[in-house]
Length: 432
Image (cartoon, rainbow, N blue to C red):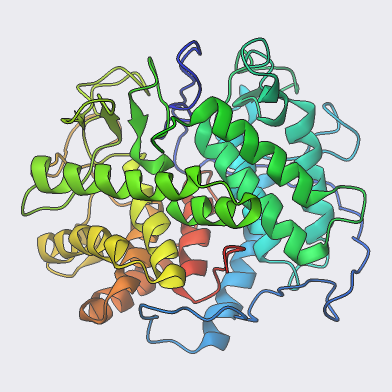
């Protein structure tokens, strides 16, 4: 239901996928306990639930923090049991986030989600560092080898898909979203556990950031897509990650990336979704003064790339998670437009929110995927509703919908859990 492609230089082949929403996985073998590191009794520098970096903006659900944390830690345990599997066929001690299609073990998108969750839930999970290291070992054992002849930094990017037997399944290309999350997770790991152990997390993070800059970014701050560098995917506009990359490296390209993301999102909403506020999965012609929604078949290889669909559905989560930590009102505005639409068009009832919309607000129906409800939409909308007090009642309704429909299926579960962590006040960034 989502494309893992859209990243890479202009010479790369498209990397796409269509996971199902709710395929359960098998449990991993027991992980060895990670050694404790200085900073807290749990061995984590930022234990889950600590809320050391208070949000500077936004609201939270009408719930106690204790109740939200209990729910989320239990759901993390259920997710881990369902989705983390052994990847010893790739590297001893390796771990992977199990993909939904049995032909494949994992995709880089899932590996990024898993690394974020391991870093985030450290302090609750005494095995979080061991899990993180197992995931990282697989990421580094399966580099984007097809990128290397064009850019030696490709060895620090993750091949976007791995076959069920652990062999290469993505022809050696990377997917930007997975590598963005991997880089962010590495910076978080440095704060959690330090970088003096078996992995230098900070240096590994900087290596991946440098590779993303050289392979996946244009000089003006726009992300690169397919089939040429002047197309990209809105769900790759991870502005909170960009701020963390700037803090880690001092490189001003990440400031430009934040600004360019806002410019493109604002144009998509005001020009192509006026009065509605949606945005497409993919944008084309970013090298011109008139970038526009994809007409289809340039990123994920389908005719819905110009719609609010299975990529853009993540955007309320990504953008709100930045606003609540940065206070950058541009992203409150962009997110608020989407949430106004979902609140008003649904009458405030989460059950009336579907899975796919044209930019004029028409809900998609028919076919194998449109319609229904999905945590991959409802989780991010819940996080997005945190940007303004006018959404308090809707936020509470979205939180309660997710609480009643927790899942361990691939894609839905990771996005739902990360989004609810944001909504609960538990997200944090190395940018501050």
